[in-house]
Image 1 (tube, rainbow, N blue to C red):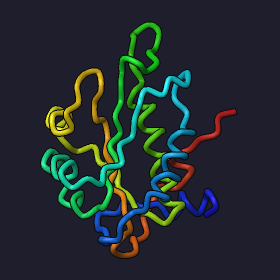
Image 2 (tube, one colour; image 1 turned 30 degrees about the vertical axis):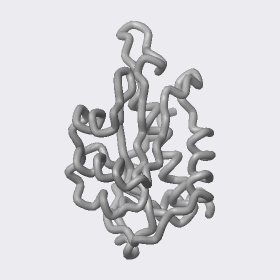
Image 3 (cartoon, rainbow, N blue to C red; image 1 turned 90 degrees about the vertical axis):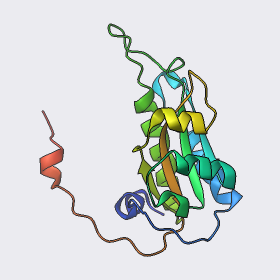
Image 4 (cartoon, rainbow, N blue to C red; image 1 turned 180 degrees about the horizontal axis):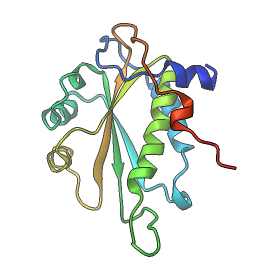
Length: 169
């Protein structure tokens, strides 16, 4: 699929068919993730592609999103802020930016392969980390549902380009 087809067809999907996602497709997504840029190429992340029923149940118990159990795969973006690049002056870790780029690579790759997804950040971080058995410095900073859409997505309304992008000469 052409890049612009990918970005124009990607939608946040909240209903999934029970069709399984193959290892082959997950490996293609893993490849796209491995190419994602991170600050100073530190790669302070790991993506879990969770199909295991018990682990999925634990994730869903820590996350109130009702659609999450429908997805055959849950992507969990783990970040390590101690390994992430830190801005000089205020020592701010940019782990969230690194993970945003990484998870977006996964989601766009999934779209190119005919899969649907939805970013999920609305959960209790402490409960999620406990459900996954994570210990500091690792943390589950974002999730994404992943699978085949149960129905075609509705078109979205976007702000005009002139309103969100400005060329400054």
